[in-house]
Length: 116
Length: 111
Image (tube, rainbow over all chains, first blue to last red; front, side, top):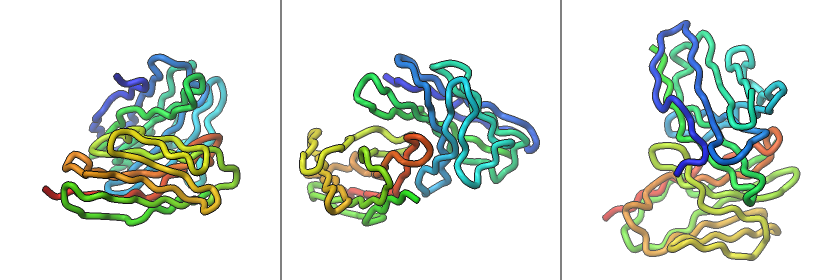
């Protein structure tokens, strides 16, 4: 079964609204989680590193005021896409590393965001 | 800047063929290399390689790392249509263990 759960799997929102995506590690604690974005037929691009109890670290070119990341607990990180635009439509995936069990990196199931 | 290059970008073979996918990397502080299979959703983990020359095997899939050549290969023998997917290679390096991915190899197995 999934060890990292992402919700919602699909969401459609109107331009100008905000949408929140949740990422949970189900049976391990993750002090660090990662958010990726994937456009159709392209590879995954790291957006930001989510740090429990502190500010996220954003990759170059990613707007931190637009993609708000909160890592309030050791098992939950959220990505909020604010003032969404159609060009934000994409596949967003989170991941977390289980440092206790061999440092395996697990991915959430991904969230398809469509902004209309 | 960390870099991962995969080849070929796409590959079409017939069922039963053997395929070899390539991944080369440039990373400041190498720790591991990971292979993932991506179908229609999020990637699923295949292998993590940390030591050079030690083959990891899972059924018809196997992978090996060559730290001298800064590369890895993923082999799939006796391919099946269910092996059709994008195979991604990644190394930790971007932003505190965040993965840097290659562009992937889009593998199509024809019946």
